Each structure stands twice: as C-alpha cells, then as structure tokens.
Length: 210
Image 1 (cartoon, rainbow, N blue to C red):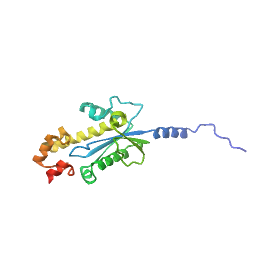
Image 2: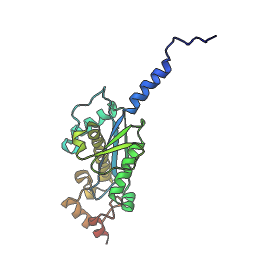
Image 3: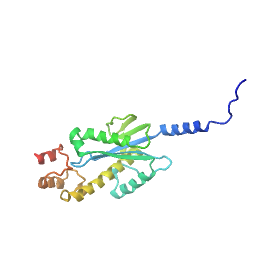
Image 4: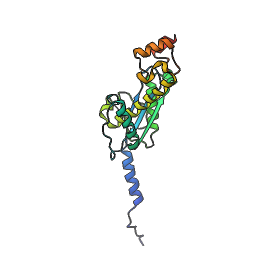
C-alpha cells in the first residue's frame, strides 16, 4: 500500500532557500584610509549595504566635507546590513611594509563582517587574500556605493584617531594634517623628533631617527 505524501508545503525549506538566495547575493565594499601618512595605523572598512534602505549622497570620502562625512558615517552605521572597521598598526606597517599592512587591514575588515558576502569589491588595483570572490575596482570609491560607504567609515575612523593623538602630542598638529607629510609636520618632526606613533620606515621619519 502506497504511503500518502503530505500535501502541506515544506515551509522551512522554502524559507531556508529564500534566505540562502538572499545571503548568496550579498556584496561588500572595501576601502582604506591612511596609506600615505607618516604616522598612525592604516584603517580599512568593509560594508554591506541594504538595497531596501538606501543612503543618499555616498561618494569618495575625500570629495566630501568633514561635516558631511560625519553625518554619513552615522547613517551608514544605522542603515547598512553590516559593517566592520579594522586596522594594521604602526608596528605592523614597519614590519611588513605599508602595502601588505593595508591588505592585512582589509582582510581583517572583511573577516569582521557579521554576514559573509558572496563577493567583495575593493577600491584600487590590489586585492587582499580572501576566502571569497573578490574584484579590484580602480576609483571604486567614487563609483560603487558600498565602496564609497567603506571609504567614509575608514576616513572618519582614522581622522578621529588623529584627533585623539593630537591631544596626546599637540606639538605635531595631527588634528590638522592627519599625519601627512606637510611642511608643518616635517618642521615639527625636525624640532621634536618622532613620537611612538610615527612610522619608522617612512623616509622623513627615518631621516630624523638617524
């Protein structure tokens, strides 16, 4: 005698399939801030945006005012499906060089996401080592919203770190130049020497130390 098959739909399987379909479609944008400065960590961010909750005005963080970046920072943290900010320290930069430290910070940012993306879009022409599909996009911070969002999180995070460093070492002016090798920063280096957060392998700092 044949057993009767249930006519009830398998709701659990249907819900799981729908979830997996949505999950597999997640795309993360990744960008960094702080490759060029003479001091401080390099900061990277990874963002998965919510298509159902769009954010207006996303752009390359360098093209936005500080006030606009701060407002978008809060909006991204509130509206994105998930986001992650990570860094590589000054010590790591000096040990493995700034490019490899940047890739390390990016990998940490992606690995820190609460949801695992199916694909990662990275600003620039280099890719960190990841266990998911990834694509490098030159000037992606101005053309891909998720990368724009990542660039804003990374930039604001690092700028706030520089403001904190400025309070500890006001003689260098970190709040103004953000660690870049401006004339004022170089003059302060010559007068005061390097602080613990200066990158010892970067030429202007190495010259002072020698």
